[in-house]
Image 1 (cartoon, rainbow, N blue to C red):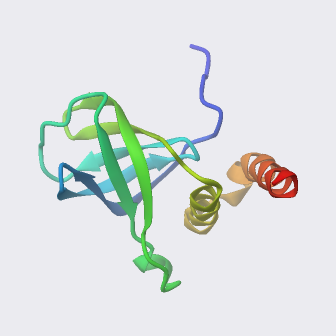
Image 2: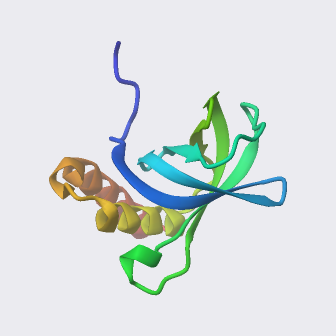
Length: 130
């Protein structure tokens, strides 16, 4: 099968919250990229495909004192206890926060380097063009 993703997904386990219909559900990230995430919910909830929600990724265990990164998402697939999310409406500030979070969270930064360099170039070009 041909890989359609633009960015590599990093596999790791990190706690987060999925906020849907004004209720927060604890979850863990199975993987994360610049375009989306796969989360494992701690409780079984009905979360249909094509729903909008918010993913809040805490940075507590990174010990940087920064607030959670909050990402607007759309559910793209669902399996028991797993939800695939695509990030929507990300501005450049949020993209920068997500990029920094990925850099800090990965235990294998060399796997991410090509994507990071391309994203840095995009952000630098965008900031010059603005």
